[in-house]
Length: 345
Image (cartoon, helix red, strand yellow):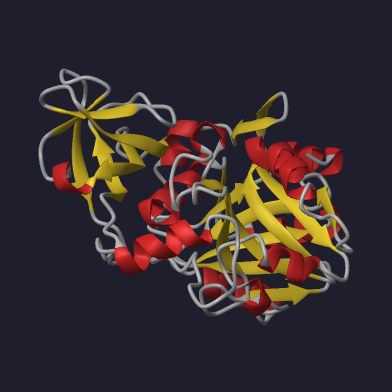
């Protein structure tokens, strides 16, 4: 995190444990704000890769699951990088800023992805660098977030997956029922916009953003579950993270074969767990007999002091009673996703 940005947040009431922002003074109250109220969320705990050079687009087009040629100054997209077996190494929200493509991702995978992806550069005119510290990153969300930003900026992204580059700021509109925007920029402009938004929103830790990601059914692949799941198992077809019309990429044959010839036996669900203890990524979900039927991907405490999560489950067993880790563990129930998933693909 940039030192100047950390200083600014401390002046706004942020409380840190080393470089981790834990709250703005009242974590219990902050957890209850989203999604009903407007929130400002520091997202410096996310990772960011910058891919630059004249071959950046063609290089990424040969590596990622979505059609990178569709990214522009006004359009961003969800995409992923798979291994040759079609398992997702990391997923990204990719956007263009200047002449570079930026990949938003889990921070604990930045070094791994940067190192592995660099092996494929070879003769391409491409530079891949860790940009996590180069730009301030925060989120603004709420039912009136679009209206509020228009009062401040005059112009905002109005549709999901739309980007607005405004001076030193890049503003991304995210998919989901609650209007959400991610902001990137230098310290001066980002601090100014944060202060203007702060009049209408409550500053909170990134846990609120994690909660809204889960409610939106948007998984984040982190180091513990890297190379565990193929795109269909994380609902990437339903959330437009795969383009079947583009050319080849690592794992493309596996992903395409399942889509056209196979049937997905597992997929991602939105779950409620009757506990206030947040499970870890890859923790097991079992049935009444104690047999594993799924694994946690992302989990967070919700406003009611229970846990909501995204998890990959066996489709065949998803309607039966489920529990966390062992059959006498906390009970689990299904919640609605905000989109429809075709279990054929």
